Amino acid sequence: MGYKVVVAGATGNVGREMLNILDERQFPVDEIAVLASRRSQGTEVSFGDRTLKIQDIDQFDFAGWDIALFAIGSDATKKYAPLAAKAGCVVIDNSSLYRYDPDVPLIVPEVNPEAITGYSKKNIIANPNCSTAQMVVALKPLHDRARIRRVVVSTYQSVSGAGKEGMDELWDQTKGMYVPGQEVAPNKFQKQIAFNVIPQIDVFMDDGSTKEEWKMVAETKKIVDPAIKVTATCVRVPVFVGHSEAINIEFEDFLDEDEARDILREAPGILVVDKREPGGYTTPVECVGDFATFISRIRQDSTIENGLNIWCVSDNLRKGAALNAVQIAELLGNRVLKKG
Image (tube, rainbow, N blue to C red; front, side, top):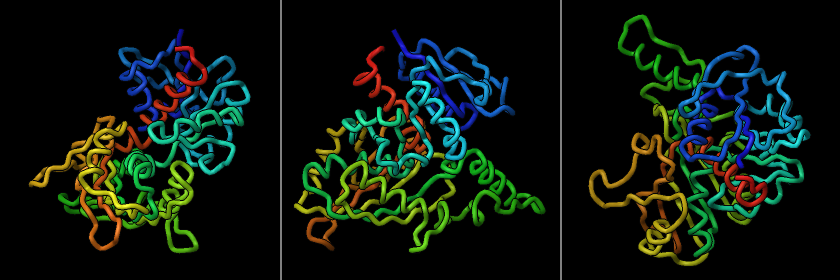
């Protein structure tokens, strides 16, 4: 016996990826509904070898459905998630709306699966920010061994993190560079993204950090350990898919780089590619379509007493969004609902 599953926002990048991953991982689906706004009603999307028609989320009745994967942004989630939850359908939300709600668990299954029991307070589970998700997968096994005191992270985030509009803008600007008179002005991003990097993701806050940087701090504390100090600089780069992070970690206890490498090799969700030779590391292009979080460039930081540097790469549409949401659904099914 399987589950009745809803995918809300099924016409977007993340929603389509959710459908792909549900099929790839053979999630036990008895019935599936795909939702979006009224203007997308009747649009067709693929689910394995099936073609599904989009239904209007405004007219949809969530009663009798088990799990809803939401990829519709915070404003729409604020309206529809409580309706679904009240109807008895557990919402797994990809927006930032509920991440910092103390009554809503924020989950990365490889890191804090035990938090799943908290879902019943609101019938809602939050999916973390894409840049946080891959980082905490790497941090948790190291934290368990040597206790992390402080993290300094610089991100190199792909344009798909800004949705289809971000991907289109990079593509159009790149083409326009080679066609005189067809240059494309910035619209989705603050400055030109083609052949450029932009040290701003989301809005600025009073302390000079951006909202994206604040998210990494707050979410790492909620998912891993509130005692960890985190400082982040988040940068948008002209890459279509795949987020990269240079992570500097300060531990309470000494952790040798070789032991760290061994720990990460054995950790769930991680693939270590770390050869000290040209090309002996993973880049975002190579991680696209993969489930793993890739770790490379593991090395001691000699400038502090107990320091380590790592390079972390992952498909942000997968581990950073859709994959993590499906993994939460699997966790919910295995530990709580127990139908599949």
